[in-house]
Amino acid sequence: MKFLMGFLLTIFMTTHLMASERCDVQFKQVSVCANIDWVYGPYLDQYNSARISYTESDKVSSLKIIPWMVMRNHEHGSRPVVLTKTGDRDYLIEKAFFMGGMEGQWFFKVQLLDPSNKLIEEARYLITFKN
Ligand SMILES: [Cu+2]
Image (cartoon, rainbow, N blue to C red; front, side):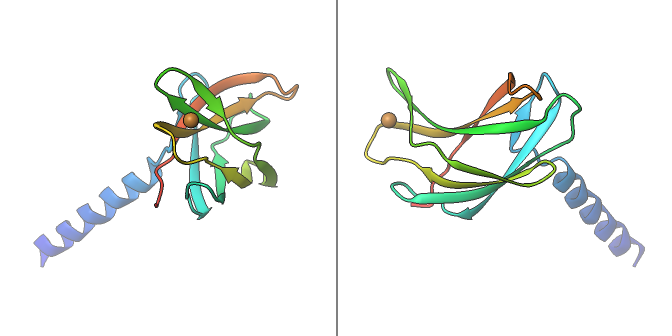
């Protein structure tokens, strides 16, 4: 019985630790984490949507999302997304479009901005498609 309790406690603590350590997009200079949850997709050649939230930092006042493709010899963007603020540090990303038929990888460039919309730090989030 004691063994079982210990075992369950270990499992519980491990999963709790893993949950609190989630950091989909890491910003090292300002020690901010952003997490992304897909609402629809991600699929190629469709409009996708997701929610993004970031951890508190007194330097950061908003963020910007840019779909970005890295190919062998160049990098390029896509259509702009529609970004709606849904909470203090939460946004809804809509109309994220990733063109298919190319050799390369799609990312979200996630930019943290200060109160005057100046770039503080940028990090990339690799898009792993469902199709
Ligand atoms: Cu491309």
